[in-house]
Length: 213
Ligand code: MN
Image (tube, rainbow, N blue to C red; front, side, top):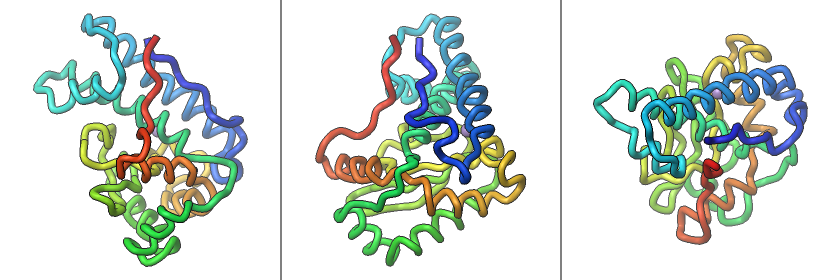
């Protein structure tokens, strides 16, 4: 059984960028439902419990509707837990190594913010916008629906923001770009991004989802 992980901060900690109401529905209903469905699928399908990363890899690209459903719920469980950790109410800046890479790749933090907002705003439908590290350099990209970086394999996620309407509709209605702009200014957890960037270069371990019990 996977547990719904607790938020790493209070429900209202990310206000005013994300309201406590949005957090309550997003974590308490949407994320909870993905975890609940994942657990019931594992039971129905008689699958042995193992770490979420290897479950996602086993279920991806399977030519079987049950496995696709398993992939969607496993990946959404992973994405949401990582998303909560990719935010912080403690405004900080990237460390020196990451700051240097941001300068080199994008030409500075403002240009990275513009790229993140542009790609997330232009993404058609539901999905996720990521800052990732690949072969020593940084990249901004989006994935559709439940698709995640576990299944991509060769990219380490540093940050992610949820592009599904449930992530912003209560607070911003249809204005996804306004949500992303406010999000990028105030909420990224740069200490996590620093650690993930180091892990992408073989220094330390990348973030992993908590194990089932
Ligand atoms: Mn979501």
